[in-house]
Length: 272
Length: 296
Image 1 (cartoon, each protein chain N blue to C red):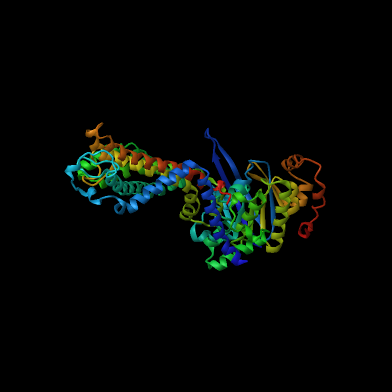
Image 2 (image 1 turned 120 degrees about the vertical axis):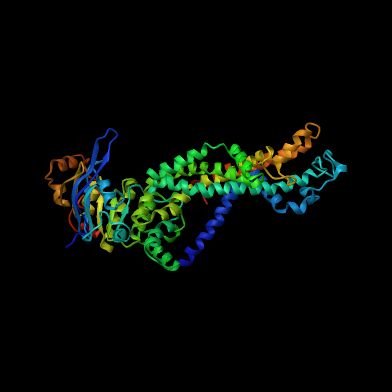
């Protein structure tokens, strides 16, 4: 099967003040199958977020290719980029900055629809309300502004906005790390439910290995711009092959909360 | 459900209005500013119908009543032509309003697009725009006005053109500084991942987030532009006599100081109160336009 989103030998580097260059993404080969949840883990600064920005075409890759549904979109512009813009959406780390402070919830969620779909006013209003309902926000939130929402509510709005174009894949950049622990669990549950309902593929960047284990089928471990190990989530996290993965796993503080134990069995996350 | 959604914005705007009234109400300086600006606008609108004799503004002469001090017949006294100073001062508000609006308007229309483009695109676009802006910032407004008037002949329009040329760089600077950090905001990235064009991002995200400093500066600049226009009038580059203009009136009145103090006092007072009004209003708008202050 053609992967939904795939990279080949992707490179990207940044200039340092003294002329040296940091290889943020250094030859990454990664494939996301339709409907699959792939976890991307690694320490801060290992290139996870840059990889996501490259995949979203927010940043230009130096070399290598990005394919969406088999089509090279590495340097696509305009109309050639439209399938990627429809098919791949992102949820960012900090929901407080991901919403325009001057735009109401309605305006935020309607924005991708206004850009990508020609809907009548009535159809637009219905669709936006449907999306809010899907992420568990009541209709009275429509005309609120971001500063009137909690972090969790903002992230729900961001998720609704990302779902609006009807994407096939969501790229999630640590979507819960800016939230309270109790809210994190709610967002994770919401994401798991959405994935099951819509058959979405996830590329899930996280520091939280327990969440990755719970939500993802496969996991890729990144270190210094390279993917050092990838495979089935259970296998990689239970029997790491690469030295760096072992270090990363050791860095997790035991003991794990009881509520998360047992969530590693395959299929169980779908039942939640 | 849909009906509720469609109704909601109206309830909000009403609440918003009440919030604005509340902010203004508990802030006396803003109220004073709003009041002064309202009186100024009212005088500009209905001036010709409320003054004692509108002909005094177009060169009527009453040589029998030259330089009379304030009295019941002439509240603000009369000038060297025997014209009623109240009449002339009130009718000059229109000129000042026109001058203020034109200068500020041209500055906003020219400066804002350049500012958001410089801040949003960065790189070479920004360098070119900002260096050109710096160049225009170096031009002294009154000297340029003198040159333009010398070349094109006197008239308030030429003075306004000169001031507009030196006024817009301030807006570029302000808006660029405001737009620059916005381009890295995640909500701009989010708009890009939706396939939003640069123009759309500029209009729906960058510009709205720059509006509040813009409105505040515009309000204060109304005052500054009126003051600048009065300066032009004072050095003889403003309205052609006998058309009334505050700066020109003070300039003429100088020769009758200090005996006919009322001649320069009242035009000066009008300049002072108008500029004060726009400045106080600008300060108040700063509070009102901050979205985080809107609890409505």
